[in-house]
Image (tube, rainbow over all chains, first blue to last red; front, side, top):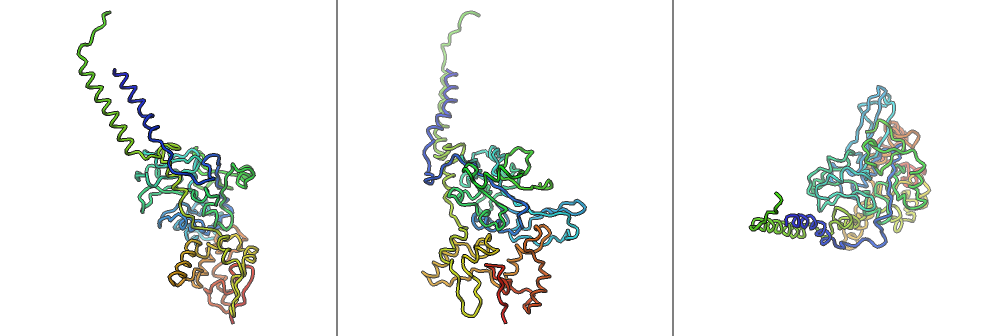
Length: 243
Length: 191
């Protein structure tokens, strides 16, 4: 009798799941959730730190002041090998001359745009206690603002600092690769406005796509490779000093 | 002991079983009421969320959307025209700069325009004003140490001196001499 009860209660869980599952919503006609291999390439030598990407992202995604879904960092390495990293207001209004390191003392300096890496093995997804953040079937990591309770565990879990707590909605928020644009065949807003082509995006599953060619021929690296997150944002000529 | 012991009094077992069944059924009812219907559709998350994310409004439209109304060159009387037309822009040095990098974005602009037509609300000039021009241009063109060399970079101080030599104010708008839409073309500075 006890065994029967045990078996019944264990078996009931997946059964209830099947009862709840329903055909929810309707996908945009013509967009298939499977069969995509999205990738983002950041060409660091081309970035001039103008901040157009940050402004476009803020506009497109209504990002609150002081928070960023994408930002640009400037690395200045002095002749004394000291590394100075700055990102004034996320580079929303570009950069000014760095006062602390005069131009004569600079050994090398460059800009590094950053955004959510939409990792294939994202550490932010399994830590969510309720399933409010997920990797969609097309590989894009998204946050369900309506379901999130704002515990902040995913914000802690992201090793790239890509996530933040939206002060208006009080839930976790981050770059979505402009999901509402890429599913319509458009580029993310930051890619659209970049004047130098430092940001590129595409679907490597499309045969002959530019992004597929860049991925196969470029000298690419990713941020914090040792963590094994398998980011989908690849950097061209990523300097070892970038953290 | 080889003899099987018979249970005559099973009431305590029945009570335990009833409690288990009540708890399990209660849990299933609570679950069906609280878990969203689309949860589990594609994985351990709300399937509706994917559709919601796809349906957000597109705001930054890109230059092609501006071309529909603004493709042709403007003819001005007296003042030199700064908009030389879509072709001149596309072939000029600023072709990789979308219209929205300097002007307002399509969504805002079309809403303002509609308000202007329907309610007579005055359209705000949504170009970069002269006061802000220099600051705006230098966001890309200032000679910062971190910028790749040889890409049209100017030192603000040095260029201010040049403006003064052309009898313009030290912080004159760049458009006094440069046509923003085809920056290799120079405008005749005002008399």
